[in-house]
Amino acid sequence: MTCIVGSIHNGSVHIGGDSAGVAGLSLTVRADRKVFRKQDFIFGFTTSFRMGQLLAHSFLPPKRHPESDVYAFMVTEFVDALRRCLKDGGYAQRHNEAERGGTFLVGYAGRLFKIDEDYQVGEPVDGFDACGCGYRIALGALFASSDSPPRERLEIALDAAERFSAGVRGPFHFETLDSAE
Image 1 (cartoon, one colour):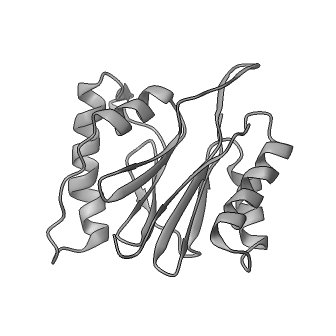
Image 2: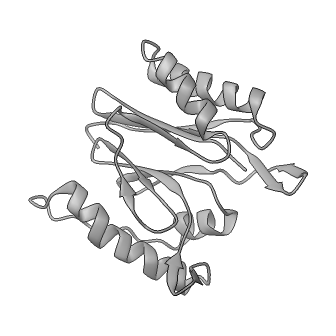
């Protein structure tokens, strides 16, 4: 299910996402959004609506000390708080003794990160990323639309994913975290 897209432009982070809820061959267009703001962060999730509900309503992102490295903060304090939240909410799973969560994009401090189900933190060198079943289509569209304004670029990527992936449906929702925030 899903296509979540994100990009960075002039220090601002932009994330967009679709509204599909998919189970097998069944599709529901959901009213609850996969893209939202929380404190100094913006999120766009895939994997599970339950995980997204925990991120939106239970997760308390820690405060970063201004002198600490943003990436180091994300891979340690942020992920540690995320793991606690998902465990407490009954979502974190164990497979072969490895703990698993879900996948989402997060914008913070003018940077875009992808958190994968094994809690690894990725930061794209190209300044854009995507996740969900439509991510490959969206990545191609993001690459090809590099000269477009940020919101239009995300719309192009989501339109392409909706056109060519059975698990992606509008309406699309967007959030921007400005560089001054």
